[in-house]
Length: 446
Image (cartoon, rainbow, N blue to C red; front, side, top):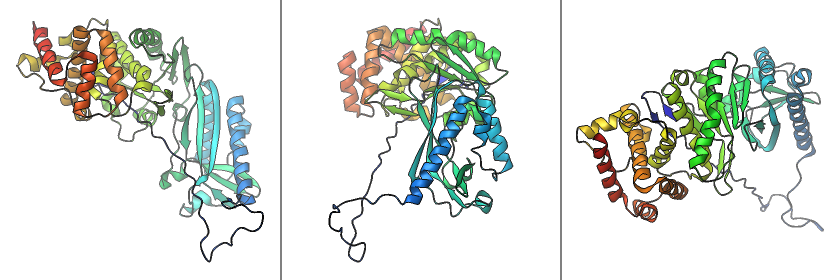
């Protein structure tokens, strides 16, 4: 992630992979409850769902299938036919705009997955959300989609859909009524305006009309940036990148997925929906760019930013949550600045000012330093980059890459274990590494 408060400060967006385990619990009847199984009925049998529930799930699944097919076929009539005729006028208008906004987006997949066992209690919803319906239902729904030219495998995002039944027919009633119950619909770029997708050899740029000049700059850098990252990063990765250029801070915040994301201070951030380090499968990787900050970057700065964030994309499958931030960000910075001609004094002015005043780092940058803001955050990134530069210069680039692979795969480890990993790759522990780094910084002043 690139912080626009300084000329070069990055905060990596390590997205933790959260594995949700579905657990089925079968309760056995106790005394006074249901009778024991009769002849021919095996113990532990799980009674089938009531026919009404199966009919409801089947009907809503069919509804979602028609909605998905309408998106893929560009059939507006079929798409709008899935909307509750008694839904709020604002919701209907929003759905019309959504359909129109999707026109410029090529998909390899757009489907929905219903989870009828994960249903919210809608008894407390306001009357306007249920008025006129014979029944309302709030099962969990995931949108599964893949952007053509960008996603090698589909990704999925949760949608907070409320369905309503009129007679025997089910409709989509709302995608926001469940917000108050804690189930929100994911918002994509098409929820904010018409989308323009511009392909390159190694990815796509998703933008909005009117962004032509910036899109031209991005497409001019994207392929070279992918090749530059692959030239140093040895592990196979899809070499496909999705750049997203939102039009507003609220859109950027939605694409990043964090309510408190500091959009005003960040130029770019690499995110992912899910990461499985065991299988090395990553879904929904995106580089989200600032709607304002990225446009102010010089050609060199833009190149550095893209290569930095694409490094995170390339290494994501091999990076375990809890890995030392100084190495993750320092390595990404090293790749970003590699061959840029930017000197240490130019790229790390705050750090070199400290060195000039004989205030040298006493230890490796701590993770908490990357959760700060302003000059402290800039200092952490500048230290991490200079440390990566020192390791590459003293031990060679391949040792820097090997160190990343070892420490990033280890995740959160103790200081003693870190010393062991450092010795295994560089032949020194933390104390010796810091000592050599300090000498390198002093020599850089000359």
